[in-house]
Length: 85
Length: 481
Image (tube, rainbow over all chains, first blue to last red; front, side, top):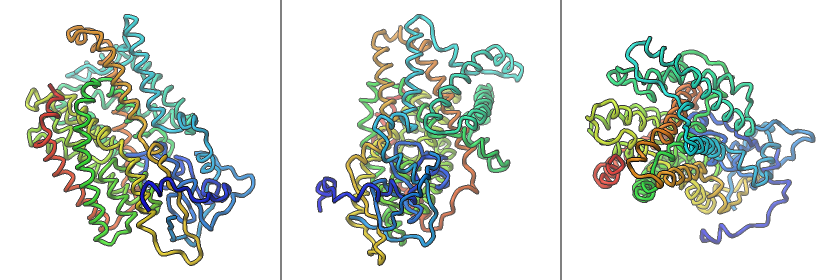
C-alpha cells in the first residue's frame, strides 16, 4: 500500500462512542501527561503543539490518538468527568 | 490497520472525559489551548505595545529594565533601588500575561502565582550576578548560573510541590524565541534559513538512522528505537513525545527516551560553549554547531546564550557579534529542525502501521490506529509562526529608517527593550530547567538505549561540527557581520 493511498484511505470508522477519545482508559490533558511521563515538563511540555491530540491509554500503557480503538473499549462511568487538565 | 498487542493485565480508569474533550474541541479552541498559541499572543502583544509606544515618541524601555554593570554590592543595590518601580511593573506585566494564559489552559493560578513570584526574584538575582563586572572572569554567565543554581537547589533541597506550577520551561523559551525573532532581520531569515534547513536535514537524518539502527541492532523495540532516534535528531523531549504518540509507543519507552534527552542536553549545555571557546569558534559558527548538536530548544538557547555572553566579555578574543550565537542557533534549531516534526510523525506513523505490526493478539485486543495527514499541522510547532511574524514586523518597521537612524532611534527605542524582555524570558526558562530537573524524578533506563542514543550523540556532534566549521562557515560567520 503506497503512502498516499494509506493516508487517503479512511477505513470504516468505528462507532464514535467506541473510540479512544471516549474510552474510560484514555487519559488526556497536558497536566495528566506531565504527571504520567517523568521528565516531560523539563525540556518539553504536555501543553505544546508537538504532543498533538495524543492521550495515554492506561489499559495498554501506550500513547494513542483519540480516533484509535480496540476491543477493550469501555464507556466511562455515568457522571464521571474528571478535571482537565 | 496497525496493531499493538501488549495489553496490560491490570488497568486503572483514566480521565477519559478530558480525552474526549480534546477530541471534540472546536478548532478555535486550539488557539487558546496550547502553549504555542499563547506564546505567540504574549510575545506579539509585548512587541505591539513596544511599537505603539515607540511610534508615539516614547518607549517600552522603562518597563524592559535590566541591571547596570556593577563592581560593588552597594552599587548594585543602589541601581536596583533606583529602578524598583520598573522591576515591579515588569513583574506585574509578566505575572498577568502568564497567569491569564495559563488559567485559560487550565492551570491553577493559586499555585502558579506564588511560584512565579519566587522565580522572578531568583531571576533578578541571576541577572544581577551576570551584571557583575568580574562575572566573566569566573565564567558566571547568567544561563549557566541559573541552570547550576536550579540543579543544585532542586536536587539537594526538597521543593514544595506548588512551586512546580511556576516552572513552565517550554512556555518561557517559546516566548523568548518569538521575541528573539523581533531582533532578527527577516532578510537574514530568508538568506540563512535554507542553509539551516540543508545542514539540519543532513544531521537529523544521519543521527536518526544511527540511533535507530544501533537500537535495532541491540534488540530494542522498533517503536522505542524510533522515539529515541527522533528525540536525538529533531527536537528532544518534544520530538520524543510527538513520535511516541505517532507510533503508539509504550509509556515506559517515552519516559526512557526523555530521560536520555535530558541527561545529554544538560551535559551539552555545559560542554558545547567551553569546547567551542577552546576551539576558537566564532559566535555564528558556534551557534550553528549548538543548533545541530543540542537536543532541546531550551537547552540549546542556554548554551548559545552562554557562548554569546562569553564572547561579550572576552574582549574580542571570540570573533563575531555576541547575538550571532543565539541567532544562528535559532535558525538551525527552530527553522532547520523543529518545523519538520509533523513530517517525521506522519512518516513514522505510516511506517509503524505498515511495517512494524506485531503478532495479532489472541484476544483481539489490538489497537486499531487511524492515520491522517492532519498530523503534520497538529504537531507543527506553531510558535515558529510567531517567530517569523515578529521578524517580518520589526524588519518592516526598520525599513522606514536609514541605517544610521535605525541605530540611533530604533535600536534603543524598540529593539533594545525587546532584547531585554527576551533575556528575562530566557532567564525564567534557564532557572526552570535547573529547578525542574530532579534526577530522582526521572525514569531509569537500561544500558542498551543509552548506548544507542550515545552513538547518535557522537555522530551528531562530529557531523554538526564539520558542517558548521568547514562546509557552511561562510553563512554562519555572515550572521556576525
